[in-house]
Length: 142
Image (cartoon, one colour):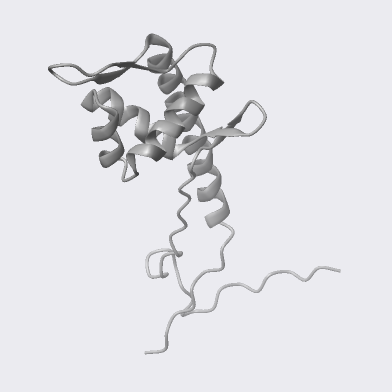
């Protein structure tokens, strides 16, 4: 049988003088498994965004803190994973080569960011609700 809660004592804590609950932070990283085993996540997205910004795979690799070879491997993966390439390259010449996102690449990034925004919104809400379940910090004597 449940007992009734005791009424607050004269010196009981109120919301005004109660220590705040500890902050709960949820920072999800969205990684989507496409096909049989190729995830599209923050690393590839950062690389694709860097290609769009710099117009160069080597500059994009530097911006994404990865080797040029690693960048090429990842770009090749995503180019073969989708129904068409996400990145188009032009061969070098007098002015050097270049790279750019295709329309499909722009669309894929937009879809990824839309998913990421929705996931973060849900996680933020649920983490806040989870935080409400935390024990209140004990006041230090003093």
